[in-house]
Length: 113
Image 1 (cartoon, helix red, strand yellow):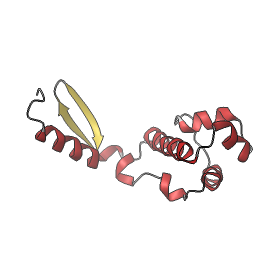
Image 2 (cartoon, helix red, strand yellow):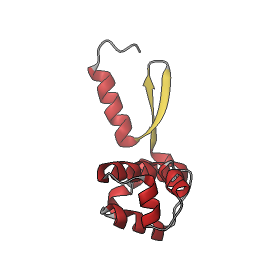
Image 3 (cartoon, one colour):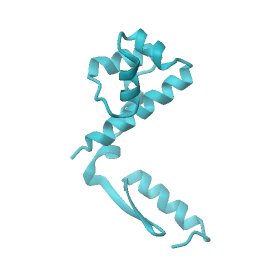
Image 4 (cartoon, rainbow, N blue to C red):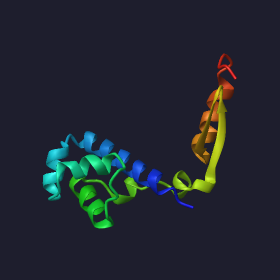
């Protein structure tokens, strides 16, 4: 099952990063696609679920491909989350992120467990 909140959060984060790299303000991006700046704020924050045609327009204006903001399926599947015990905190992470964190924890001998 796809975690829709995580899906739109990741898309928003990737759009924000692309916008920063392009040096475009939220206001300019909004004007470029004929939306309000608050829509850009909400899309980047993962709070507003932009329709596909809006995502295409955003990517076109940022001069990036739509595929570059779309997460892999395993990044957003609820059933692919793995529990990682990091000291007193147990975190549910997508498979690849969990593997990376577990590797870091194994390499850090002074990390309290």
